[in-house]
Every structure is written in C-alpha cells, then in structure tokens.
Image 1 (spheres, rainbow, N blue to C red):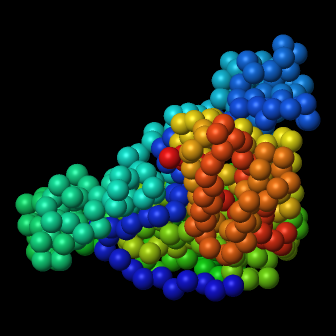
Image 2: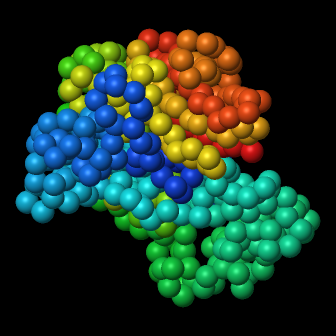
Amino acid sequence: MFKPSLMRTWRTGIFFVAGALGGGSGCSGGNGGFGGAGGDAGPPHCLTAADCAADLVCHLGICQAAVVGDGTSPGDSDTTSSGCNCTGRQICDPATGTCSDAAICVTDGDCVAPRVCVFGACEDPPACRTAADCAGALTCYVPQLECGALSCTTGADCPASLHCLPATSICVACLVDSDCPGTQVCPFGSCQEGPSCAADGDCLSGRVCTASACQDPSCATDSSEPNEDFAAATQIAAGSHTYTLSTTDTDMLFVPLTIGDGLLARATYTDALGDVIIEAYEADETWITWSPGNRGAASLRVEETTGAGVYIEIYLDDGICVAVALEVEVFAGGGCFNDFGEANDTAATASTVPSDPVAVTRDVELCPNDTDWYAVTIAAGATLTVTIATSEGAPPIAEAYEADGETLLLRDVTANPNKSLVQANTGAAAATYLLRLEAADAAVLGAEAVLTFDTQ
C-alpha cells in the first residue's frame, strides 16, 4: 500500500475539507431520523422505545426484546431494560438509564445528540465539517471549522478568525504584526516568532522564552524507550497510555490481535505544542493507514487485521516536546460498525426517509457484504436528488428502484466517490422510490458515506 509523503506546514496552516471529518455529514448529525419501513415483512423500525410495543425496546433501529449492553461492542446500541436507548457505540449507564458519548467516535451515532463526531471526538456541532454545510460556493476551513470563500476580496469573505490578503485573494491568519499575539510578527500571512520574547506565549511549537529569546525546552524520554522501530516496539493492550514525543523521537507500539479483529486508536495532545501523526501497520510491517493531527487529535481505524496484531507508530510532524495520550480500543471480529439504519438489508425492510419536503442528510456505513435500502416518497411533479459522498473505503454501488423493489430506474457502479441519482415523479400522484446501496466489493473492509436526499 502506498504511504503518503508528508509535507511540514506552518502551525497556522489553513486547509479546506470536502469530505466528512471523523464521521458525520452536516451538523444535523446521524442519530436516527428514519421511521418504519411499512408492510408486514420483518420487525418494525424505530427511533426510540416509544415507537415499539410495551414489551419491546428500540435496538439498532429495530423493535426487539430488551438486552443489556456494555457500550463496548461494535454497533451495539446499548438498549437496556433500565430505559437506555443509545445509538451507535454510545455507552449506557443502567443505573440511570442515560447514554454518554463513546470514548472514540466513528459516526455521529456514537455521540449523544446534538453533539456530533469531529476528528474522532464528540463535540457540539461546529459551523461546518464539510463544504456541504456551507452556503453557495463557500467552503469549510480547517482547523477553524468555519465557512468562508476560497477566493476573497474583503475580510467578510473569510472565517471570523482570518483576514483577506488582497495580493493573493486568500484568507490568512494575519496581515500585520498586531494581528498576532504578543511579540510575534506577520511575514507572508502567518504569525511567526519575533526577534525577542517576553513570555512563553510569544513562542511557537512549545518553545519557551528564556532571556528574551525563544528556545527549545528540555524533553525527558518516557518509560517505553527505546522503541523507535518495529524490532523494538513496545507491546500494549487496549486502554489508555501516555507517551512523550520529541523532535527526533518515534514511538512504535504493538497491539496483539486475533486475525479479523478491528482496532480504533486516538492520540490527543495540546495543539499549541505541535502536531502528532499516527500510523498503523500489519504484523508483517505492511502499511495500513495514517491520520495527520488536527485540532489536538489524530484518530485512525483498522477495520480488520490480517495478522496477529497491529503496529501503531506515533511521531511529531511539528513541535519540540509533546505529551501524548493514546486511547486504544479493540473489537473482536472486526471494527466495521453497521449504521443506525440496520436492519435494512431488503426492499421490504427499507428505512423510510421522511416525506415531502425531503431534505435529509445522514452518515451511513456499509460493512463487507452489506446492502442498505431506503424508501422515500415525493409529491407529484417533484424531482428527487440523492447524493452519495464516500469519505472512506470504496464507493458503494447505488441503485434507484420503483416501489416494488424490482423495477430498476437508475444505477451507478463507478468508482466515483461523489455519486448523484436524479429521479423525477412525472405522475399525477405521490410516488415512492427505493434507494439501494451495496458494498462495492466483499474484499473491501467497509465504506463510510454521507447520504443526502433532496427534492425540488
């Protein structure tokens, strides 16, 4: 697998995002939102226990007998007889019947509404997470998570914390020295250390102010050293761990697993001190995936290991000395989590999208061999547009059917990560259409996508 080369950037770097950030789509989140499928086939769908018969609870969007969950199983909704009605990987407290955020989130369903998943952590909804959250031609700026224009003419075109640089028509961190804190200066739109300092806050990347000059701090090694390569990797188990990274230090860790297990890992740190990168390798040292740090966190997921464990490498992309808290979760049988719409694997059990006016955005996940069906009804003369923006994995096969689930209307089997199906209702009465999503390849470990239904 190709390992991307890394390019060091200024700490005040600005990025744009089009895909989902650590799960989710727009700020509307992904916690439920679909009602029953209709018909007599299969158990009734639900959002809460109130949608089910008195002797049933709502678990994974299906009315069924109450079970007690512990919040650690992939896809476990943690519905309990004590009154919990959690979604995704939320954690249930049986004593109080309340749900709390998952320690590491993958989709919005892992967070208690209205909180959403941002870079692997549940947070209050930011102004945007993708360009789709912004009006018109605006885009979403990272790490600000605010909407702004790609090309600016005035400061009003930029996020509130940025300025418009007329010479280049781009939004930057500063225009003059006074836009920067303390004694920092502003060359080329970025705040940098000045010729002298008065306090540590005048220095960047964790450097300290000593005798009016910014200097590198001393950095003590942690107890896991030396563990700079595969041969010297420190073996760790699921749970919480702490490490100290310096400019020249790399920490290589090894998590023993059974073939087919999944893993989530999230490194958190003080953003002002630097940036941390986290990478994952198979037991045979084959590179799997990586995550660059942003806003003080870097998260990655290994859906299914092919060997006896996973190596986790953490190192600095920027900074001098950074303390890192690493959280690791292991999932027997794989880390692909079916989304809240399950079980919607057939036309008869399709998740129903709220009818006209249709304006629904949801984050969905397709595990290997999984098929998801959605039903939507639109008024006579209306046109339905369904967009599928794949943020991770292979883009799913997308098909549109008549209400019978057999008459195929539209099909997209391309590898395009941004698919769009458009269907007009030319009849004289309201009509129901079915959307079918299928994992593109059984060998693919899963796909995450932002699914949007809209009518005009």
